[in-house]
Each structure stands twice: as C-alpha cells, then as structure tokens.
Image 1: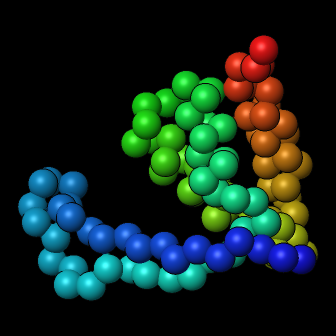
Image 2: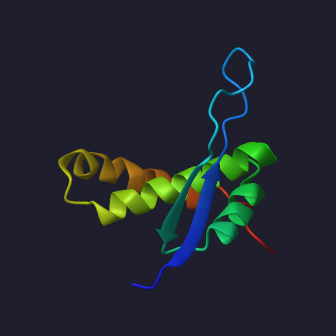
Length: 100
C-alpha cells in the first residue's frame, strides 16, 4: 500500500510546573499513513469540536495511533480495541458540517 511519509518532531518546552525543559534533544521520527494528515486536520477543524491547537494535536495523534493499530492488528491488545476505534472513527466522520 502506498503511504504518505511524515517527519514528526516533538520538543519538550517545559515541565508540568512550568520549569524549562531539561531535555536537550527533540524526539524525531518518521511516520507513514495511508491518509493525508493535512486533509484530516482540515476535516477536524471543520467539525469545530476543539480549538485549533487541540485540532492539530488530535488529528496528528489520531492518525499516528490509527496507523499503528492497523499495521499491528494481530496484537491482542489492539484487536480488543479495534471495534471501539472503528466506532469512534465513524462518529467523527459524521461530526463535520455538511457542505452545501
């Protein structure tokens, strides 16, 4: 299956108490997805479920998580969760306003 390729970077800025991070390096990795995550983000933003920053985190996290689930569907933990994930995705797809 052809997949979109992404480079994900996470930089720790501050801890839960607001202190500057002590981590010196960013977490960086490549990720692949059957969906265009930027199109998914645009869709999530149309739903207006959450603010823009949360929409970015949600769309990226959802698609990264979902792809791992699909690629590892034989893992018992993921098998047990798959029905709920499918149901959640169906509900999300119904939540965007209809275009006229």
